[in-house]
Figure 1 (cartoon, rainbow, N blue to C red):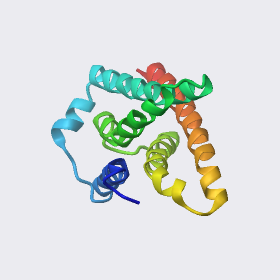
Figure 2 (figure 1 turned 60 degrees about the vertical axis):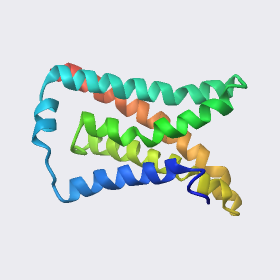
Figure 3 (figure 1 turned 135 degrees about the vertical axis):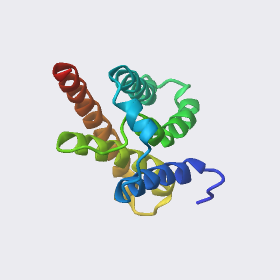
Length: 158
């Protein structure tokens, strides 16, 4: 795989690796954590994440409608998708517990899967090449469901 043609592979994996390393080594950014303690900031950054998810879902909508724009949007889908960890980190510096850990892992794992897409598409193992988009879409549906649950729980307890 030519990484110059697929920089999102390196960006996606690199950003997720930085998030994991930050969590493992318990690196704290006091100013960001203080900002995240503000309810208005938390709501705004959560809305940005929801907008990110909505943008990512436009590719599926374009493909369902067999739009000619789907091919062009795929490039933006990959670029924006690889930058997802930055938005995640702006919203939360920790992965959380229980369903929040599941949501965090699913969100970041799906970014890794999407970032690995160029590599997976070139594999000569038919079942992997055929199944990764299904797993990616299923993880996206679960991410939206858990995000809705998180929004409900966060709104209920605030």
